[in-house]
Length: 207
Image (cartoon, rainbow, N blue to C red; front, side):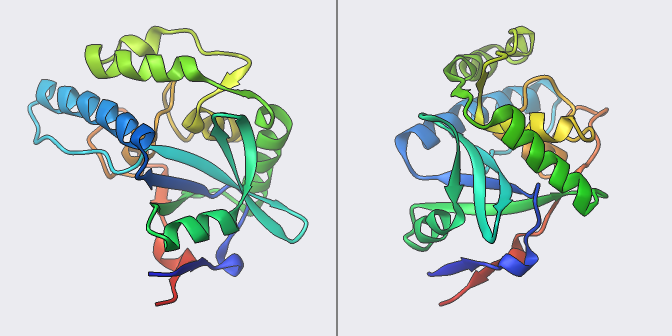
C-alpha cells in the first residue's frame, strides 16, 4: 500500500499519532497497555489496548510541511515525506487528529509555541522511566516532576497546545492520552473530548 498526505487538507497544529513496529515502539505500547489494563480493572470495565506509541505536531515552514517531534536526538523537524515513505513501506501506521473548535490562528500559535519553546530540547528519557512506573504502579508517575529542559513526544505536543487552550487535561501527557481525549479509550469522568480524528480526509491511499 502506498499513501500520500493531502497537503491541501493540512493546517498547522494538527496532531500526528503513530504506531511503529520497532522494538522501542512495541515496548512503549506494552507499558501503556499495562497501565490501561490496571485502569480498566480498577474501574470494572472491559480491558482495551492502546493503538499508538508516538505523537508529533504538524508544522509548516515556507511551502514545506514537517512533523515536530521528540526523537532520541532531541526535538526536531521531520519532513512529512519521510512519514509517507515509512507508512508506504509498512514500517508504521499513522492517524491524524484536530483540536475540536480550534481556529486556524490557534493552530498557528501552537506551531509557534513548538518552534519557540520546544524545538531543540533534549529527549526526555526520564519520561520513559515514568512510563514504566505508571505501567507498574498506575498513577505514581503523575507525581514525578516534569523536566523543564527535556521533552517526551506527547509532552512536546501538549506543551505547544496548552499555551493556547486546554487539550490534554493532565500533567504528563502520554500517547494513550491522545486516544483518551479523542474518546477512543476509557478515561477519568472529568476528562472531556477535545480531539477529532480526520485521518480519512488527510491520508490518500494511492494503491
